[in-house]
Length: 282
Image (cartoon, rainbow, N blue to C red; front, side):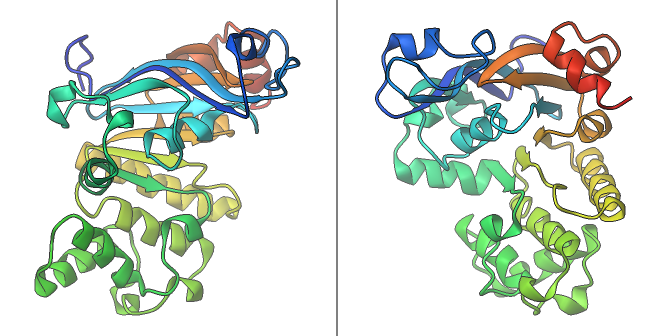
């Protein structure tokens, strides 16, 4: 991975999401300095505002912060799960990064999601269809990506389940019969089915037993190294961020309060909020 100004994979500018009616003051009167996301003038909720960053090919970027910091909102906006209020995002594999993907048609957004992105949600029910088998979930993603050959789909599903250490004999079992950790592995298989250059991971180990968390994190790290896929990892847990990421963004009350190399932030955090987060690791 080489980070130069002109080889970015994803560029995000001024990404903002506000719930409710808002004015310019809604952004001015909220944020870390006010310790609030709620505008006192309009009552609108500023989930995130003025989010700017670049992600490079093969890089793993962490976004960390407590509940309500806006970190999950950022990835859901970028994955088109919700619409932004303001801002733009550019993805280099789509039209050479010249078109704001957040303003594309629904048809083009579906294409981008199916070919160029993957998402692993905190709750597997958000990323898996529990009416389908584990293999059927992977097939769904492959079909949406334009692969209709039954034999190829079956082979690809087998390969992905092996990669994520899901017993291939359980390919025809539904996710409801799997453990939480196994459901996450199936969700990861589905997310990477079409070899996207970008994968979002939103609190993927929350709610899992500690031993299962470690195995899932080991799997993610191995897949990243093997596939060279760029990732954005959202977590409130700095131990997850430390294990997986190259750079980290720290968010509070919908704003970025600090950014830098993960090792730098963990060893010498500058913002008082980052210091508080890091102290929780000690």
